[in-house]
Length: 117
Image (cartoon, rainbow, N blue to C red; front, side):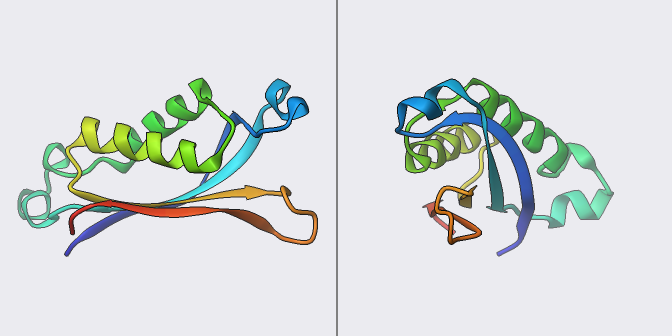
């Protein structure tokens, strides 16, 4: 299976269950991998047949800008649904890290896989 990936994408969003978190924007760090057959785009060096990671990154940033979730789990699920629907991705993995949520840890979060490889 071919994959396209985006690593370390930083997005700002409203995320958190505590009242003080509902009034600020926080950084999440996203690592994403998408199943994508890269033979067709490579054959003709054709961006229109590729999963354009610049466009995908832009859509992810727009999603995060509008999002207002309490849980990183919900953020990950809704983002997965959105990307699968918009780009026709058959499988993806998303890791969402919330830095600073636990003082003794570099970050905490979730990792999900959706679709079929």
